[in-house]
Amino acid sequence: MIPARYQASRFPAKLMQDLQGKPVILRTYEAVLATNLFDDVVVVTDSEVIYALIKENGGNVMMSKGTHESGSDRIAEAVASLDVDIAINVQGDEPFIDKVSLERIIAVFKNDKDKEIDLASLMTPITDWDEISNPNTVKVIVDDNNFALYFSRAPIPYPRDKNAGATYYKHKGIYAFRKRALADFQKLPMLPLEATEKIEAIRFLEYGRKIKMVETHVTGIEIDTPEDLERAKKAWK
Image 1 (cartoon, one colour):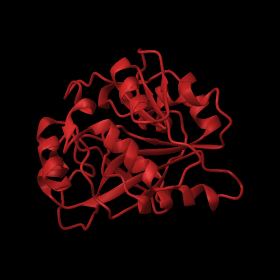
Image 2 (cartoon, rainbow, N blue to C red):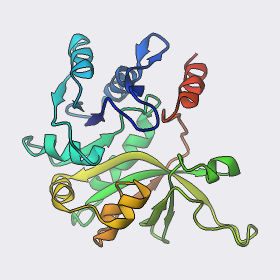
Image 3 (cartoon, rainbow, N blue to C red):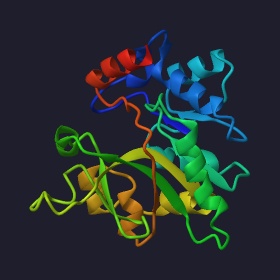
């Protein structure tokens, strides 16, 4: 499932921006489809423009209502009517999404015989301090079993001692949900920490749920700003 909201606070209409001949959202859709990992790939959008684009290119797309607090809320609405066990949420601004990372996140559920894990997500190590300090880069800290402790736009952990050897992880906007977890997510009201940071995964932590994080070393470019788009154009070449 690929949530695709037309308006974005930092970069309006970013999903319709040209990325070497095709709009960003179409590049993302085609990248997910090309992995051949899924029974179906669906764009879920509030935009008639995006809807028409995906349809014109032979893709699978659903309209959602326009007022959603997060991409996961949009996906929850769409998945409610579908017969699925697991839904993977790939953000529409992830045209560099790769097969290996998606296989790893799917493996979490294949190995979870007792169905104890409701949600999994991806993280990648980062070392560049400019990126660690950048509020557009969401960071995550985890416990010894790679369950998320917290997500933040601030540098976490705070580097009071930079020689302590802590690894900084960037949270990649890919989520894998059991269907029941998505249904729960939509019913749970947003609490202050999520509202403050504007990071939807925090909602699960605030309600005491666990998120299994999967480390990946495949780095891509998430298109949050016009500068990201320019970097993506160069990388695509």
